[in-house]
Length: 157
Image 1 (tube, rainbow, N blue to C red):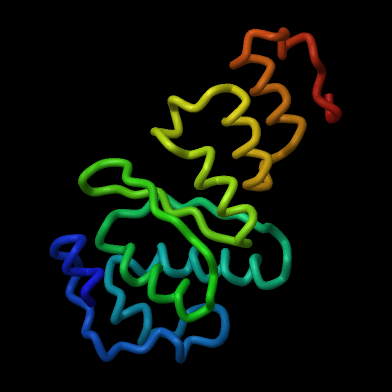
Image 2: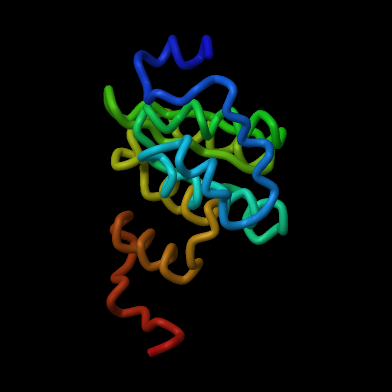
């Protein structure tokens, strides 16, 4: 809870609430009640952890309010999942987590607000996060001014 104190007052979650007991999906009702308003975020987070464990994706990004961060960080620690936190505002943070090499690259690229990344940095981060590659290419062309994305038809078109 030292981490919680460093982040300021968060939500009232008893320290003895063990989230490690939650082994399956969806979260047990006891966990959802203990987490209060963070329950939807924790369900989404648990789904991400499931995808991570199954190898569906290697890097994840969640924007959280600071009240939710201690619960998520505790779970990441128990699962041994690499992560880093980017400050967004006094009440919001971006949490990147996943395979160590992916997190290391994201940490190196994300050194300022996401909306100020270069077209190349945005493309690389989107690709690492598993976003649709064709859409990332079109986004890159539009942001970089190196092409006209409307001239490049989508495969589905």
